[in-house]
Length: 176
Image (cartoon, rainbow, N blue to C red):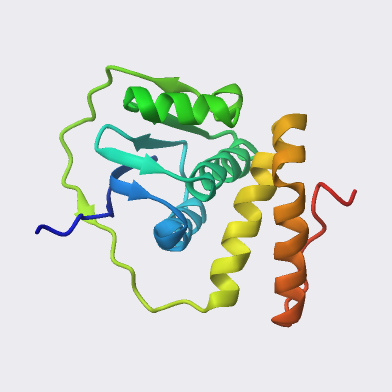
């Protein structure tokens, strides 16, 4: 029985960053991608292109991470674009309103670049993982009222869990 591979391959070409999600893109590997994207955005980045052609599934944490990253990038005049999602992936992006705030384009070819597998690096704490999940869901809740309602109880519970772990979470859009 073969084990499924869930990784991100990344490349950079000047001020453009490329990410290929391979396998599942979810809360288990979102922290690694978040750390990479945050580090890249500390340098000059105009475009982050996320290729979902090999993505077999994604969860709300991954989608929220894309929304949050897109918003952060927009503050410096940059843009995040999702390309080549599968039909199922495109439906998922639409269900949570991600397509309302991030351009999604099909039929794109990436430039010939040398992609490398994103390494997990140092194991991060449960607290850090919970903070990534919280930020991702806050980003989704900010898209529309349906998401705000859908994730309200989850965000309240997550904020309580973060408090028990000694974190001082940022004010959520639900408590403004």
